[in-house]
Structure formats: C-alpha cells, structure tokens
Image (tube, rainbow, N blue to C red; front, top):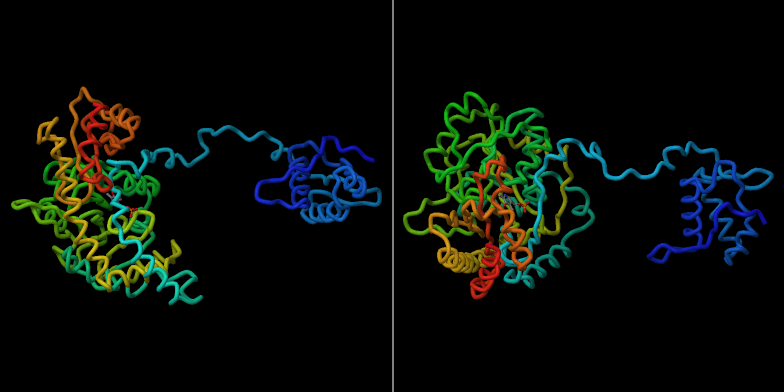
Length: 478
Ligand SMILES: Cc1ncc(COP(=O)(O)O)c(C=O)c1O
C-alpha cells in the first residue's frame, strides 16, 4: 500500500461527525498545511479503507468530494493532490496584530463588567418582569404570523406597535408625533448607528456630552465622524455661542431628561437655545430619552418632558428603548423623526438595514394595548425609587450629599469620588467583592485629565432590603 506521508487515524469533531466528513476534513487539513504536497499520491481507496477500518465506499465518497472541490485529481495511475497555490494557506496564522481592524475600531471605548451583578447600571429588575404575561403575548403573536411576516419587514415596524408607541410618547413624554414618524429598530445602539451613518458624512462634526454615553461615541467614531466633547454642568450640556461658531455641529447627541451619566436635567433655556440654533438641513439634534419612563422627580425639581415636543418640526431625532421597561436582550428601540424627513429617512433606513422581529413587535403591541405594560411601568416606578432612596441613604452616610448626582429618573446614581480614591482601582476591587460599579472616568472623552473621578451605581437589580449589605461590600473597596 502507498504510505501517506503522515499518520492518519480518524478522529471526529464534536457533534457527531460522520466518518466520511471526518476523512474529508482531515485530508483537507493535511493538504492545506502542506503535510500532503501537490503531486503526492493518495492511497488506493481499498487500502486506505482497510488501514482505517472503514468501508471502502466511505473512502470513495470522500475522494469524490475532495475531487469535486478541487483538492485532489484522479488520473490513470491513481489519485494525487492537485497543484494548488498553497503558499498563503500554509503560512502560520499570525498572532493578533496592529492593523487587523480598521483604525477607527481600535478607538472605540471598550465595555466591561458583569451586567447581572448588583449596582451594574442600566439593568432593570429582570425578576420583577411579568414573564408569564409576556410569554402569552409571544405565543399569541406566533399564532398570528404567516410566512409573510417572517421575511424581511419594511422599515418602520409593525403598524400596531408604531401606533402604540406614538400614543405612549404623546401622553407620557410630550413628544409631537404620529405613528408614521415612529421607526422601530433593533435596539438603541442601532438607532445611534443609523443617525451617525445616515445623517452625517465621514469627517462631519458630532457634539457629545462629556462625560457621556460610550455607545454614542462608538457609533460616531465608527462612522468616521469628528467627535467634539462638550462639557456638562448642573443644567446639562453647556454649549456656548463661541462653540457654535468655531465647531459648528452636524450632529448633537444629548440626554436632556437625565444626562448620562451625571444625571443633570437640561434646562429649558438651553433646550430652546439648541432648538433655535439647529437649522434643518444643517444640523440634527439626537435626543436620547433612554430611562425617563421611571420619573422620580421630587417637588421643586424640573419636569422631564421631551425636548422634541417643544418646537414643532424641529430637526430632532428622538430615540427611546424598551431595554429598561422590558429587558435589554429584547433589542427593540424606536426613533421618532420629523414629519418632513419621514419618507427619505425611511428609504435610507431600509436601504442600510434589514428589519424583522414581527413576532416580538406584535407581542409588544398587544402588551401595550392590553394595559399590562403600563401596569408594569406603574408598579416599578415606586420600587426603583425606594431602591434609589436606600442607596442614597448609604452613600450619604459616607459622602457629602453634594457628591451624589442625578437620580431624577432612571435606574442609577452617580457618585463623585475624591482624588485619593481613583475610580478604576475602586471598580477593580469592588469586582473582587462581587459588586459591579462603573468608573465615571470610562465615560469621559478625555479620561486622562482626572476631572471625572467617580462611580456609576445602578440600583435596578438591587432589592432595597439588600442594599445596605451590598453597599457594605462595595465600601470595602474604598
Ligand atoms: C444612555 C443610554 N442610551 C440608550 C440606551 C439604550 O440602549 P439599548 O436600546 O441599545 O439597550 C442605554 C442603555 O443602557 C443608555 O444607557
């Protein structure tokens, strides 16, 4: 028998690989790694079958497949490895190297931390969600759909859901919109990507709050935009007239209801100033209203209605998400675009992405229409507020009240730390104690200057009865 130039003993890949598939895979690997060289003769099928203890037919079928794919060729004298340009295939796989990704990908802020541990910000209480009711709505929706709803959907989403969202936003957030203006998309991050790529050209200037939402920075960097860090104070993003002159923006990203992460509410004066200066066709305001459904405003605090509803037909894209009201893995969010942009924006969105999720969207529309979703919202508001109060009480025992920021809405508080407690070190030690805090400096655009040293503490998943003990664990990291 002709000897193979390497020992061949059949080994099987996990998952129940057939003998034929295993033989094909191993011979292919031998050819691609140079163990079998072009021109090398393969054993006769009968001999190889006997050597491996398998049926001859298995070897014949494997050879047929390798021949069909061009790896081997048969002639009168037998079967040989085909003449292949193998230099590249034989080169050892390089270690990860600089230049592997686009340079923009290397500039993206990195994510870290276990989102399910206590104090991870941005995560709602997934144990309190009415799962049985949601499962029923999903089952119902599956019963309704046919093949028509399971292919790619037109941009915009299920009409019933668009109508429910428009109603919800008009009533609860003061958003000026009709269902046609609502575009349901697969998550807030995708909405940001769509804004970055469809509303601005590479090189255009995008203003971001500093500190601000890293996913917005990622979307803008990945789209090749020039990110300009705009400072934030207790009235929200502080953009003065000079900045408008020197660095006129194409996009302005902001979180007016509850600045992420510091928690300021954008003042009416600044809202009106932005709306007055942003001229349609030249500038877009992206209003990310990510967590204001949980409104904890106390007497005397500013109300939180949407900036979008202040001036009719302003160039504002309003973004909301169901990540807080339902769960982050659902990946359903929405954008509200001005009436005058609906057609063009919808066409561009449809050209860039593929829409789907008909089942989830129908279930969600029914969840709205049945009143169950709003009941959940009404039930969770006070729960989160009590959790915030419990966390605040613990923080106030150790820190000055002026170091505790935000909390008029949503699921997190921000704590400024003194310089002798560097936030990244605290976060690292806290992780060792089983609690997650996010470093405020990770949200800063120029993290090096030390101006933003603090922690983001989410209370969505932390039961108020457990907060003192959890905080004790966190405090061990100080
Ligand atoms: C500031 C901000 N915007 C938007 C979102 C929504 O993100 P997504 O819909 O991708 O979950 C979040 C989620 O945590 C957020 O923190």
